Length: 154
Length: 199
Image (cartoon, rainbow over all chains, first blue to last red; front, side, top):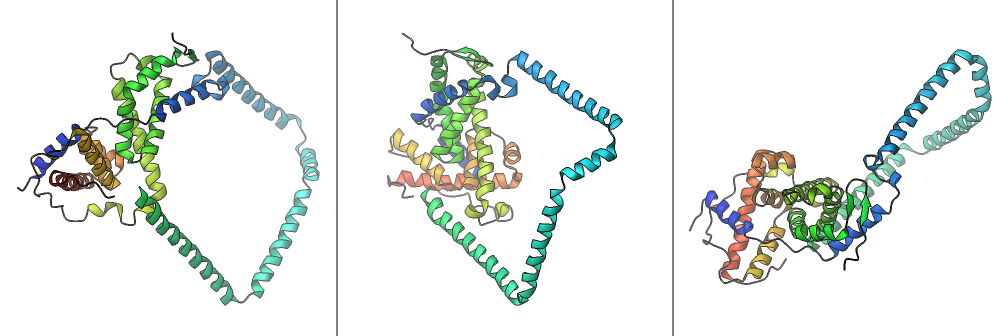
């Protein structure tokens, strides 16, 4: 006997709704209680901010606001009272080592470009194609292994 | 004598573990069933169920006396399962689904007219019947099982399912139609013979 989609929907609905709940694993209860115990053992400041005591939350907001205001005030004071040219030269002396590092990196870059220029272009393209080929091969093998081993075992 | 030590929490006040354990025992099968039918994996469903009960614990003071606690737990279990599936699908899409996601949209409508008995499982006991249906559900591909479960178990309308799964309404309808047909084919088999699932 042929059935219409509406009849099929009714039949499947009745069949599925008659299904009892599946029994939860025995380990679930123990896992939940262990997780609750681990959470309650944490100090209050490791909980979410919303769970902090009210006084701590107010204190934290007040302290953060005070620090931000102090920083803004300090910056304003510095901009008005400090000789910026003198500060600039002092800073330049302090971070002079960055220049040395920059020169060393430039030397390395020049050496690398010299090496690359000395290699025939064909070799470079070949190496690039080889890299891409091996990458695609390994990716394909991974996907095939996943589908063959993991998907079938589900 | 009750040896359980009361636990003090910021949000829930004084909760004795026995209260929460009783609460959990009342609902754990329902929460686990909701999760496992959606994700199709026992271990992942257990993880999701744990997360659901941890969230429930955070608001246990309101949930323990609420008549809608079951509904709240079911909704959270459904949401967490869908979030999990979404993350999992994005991560493993390439590996597990080589075909296009919207493949069902542009194909012809499935032939849902087929010979089916008035009822499945003639001559089967309740345990065997339950096992058959659960395994038949597991055999459905995810893109058919998830909307089918949302429609028939969670009473979610088509448009809401489409919104939640980020797919078109047409795809949801086609997937559910095909899932019913596939499920009926598997289950109709059970009326004829008691052979076990091979997969």
